Length: 169
Length: 169
DNA sequence: CAGTGAAGTGTAATAGTATTACACCACGGC
DNA sequence: GCCGTGGTGTAATACTATTACACTTCACTG
Figure 1 (cartoon, helix red, strand yellow):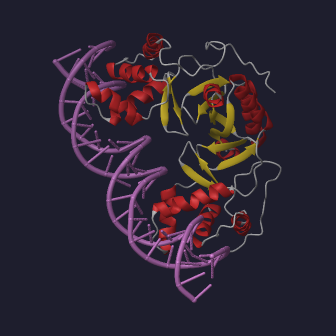
Figure 2: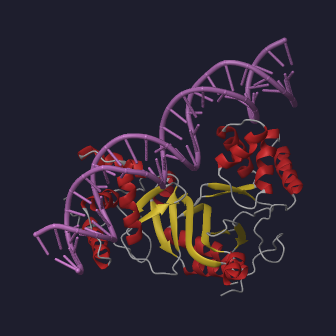
Figure 3: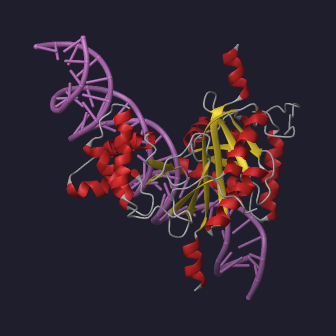
């Protein structure tokens, strides 16, 4: 049942693992816009946290971010968590529940959409892919149980294409 | 051990919130069978951890289980984690990634199946519901990305039927 | 029947993730 | 001005999970 090409993705053809250099500036801009819309400041700290994540290929834990930032100037984990909270609200960063780690996302998500986080157990990268079928499945399960759905978490551990190829070679 | 409530509202068709009294003895038996099949001992500790979870309506954290068990005899978290590892392998207990907590499950799961954990943000209970649509969606997303899927995590936060009704009243 | 090895236990210590509390700062609005 | 909302920096703490190690149990086997 592969024929599932969901909405337009801003990702190029194959859902890419948010690559390290996928326009950091654009991500910053998106976060800034969100802040403006809420009349909240887009502070230095928020930008720094997002920048670290945007440059990274893999999810990082809050403490890894803390370490990265502390190289230039000592920061504490709580400051990073505050930044992450904001960025998650802004939709610029997602939390990977299975790994308790965080990664940047360069595109908008629409309400009601179900996004699958495919996590490579070999290299650690994450690919996002929206799925209508999953969304329908969740909706159906909820309906059947009289459950009022709010926020879905869909993570799929496995091996990414790149790592599979590498091994095959 | 505790009284057996003859009330087994076993899986009527679909997911019920694994109620506190859904036959604890049967769960123990299932775990015991798994152990036997693997030629592993089904020890006191394993039984105790499972019993605590089976009697509870909501997921518990490892430390909550530790506290419950420590009432009768002091145990340490690591012992509980060991029990949980076994029980998860046995399929008798699932981990809720979004809450870092654990709950008992009274039925088998089949490979390739995708199970939705519906978590009520009000009362904390979890209902399980298998969904073919979700399974297909995951499969499709993986195929499309050349991703080799292994273990899915599907959690849906929201409000259960009971809590919705209560509020409405 | 001793010897061996896989598996579990109990205990202590530690690593890793996240939050609370509080004093202080910055800025926008009346 | 000054007040309120929101951010920062710092310290401390709570919560989740793992590692290490000495000891036990038990099935197997030589």
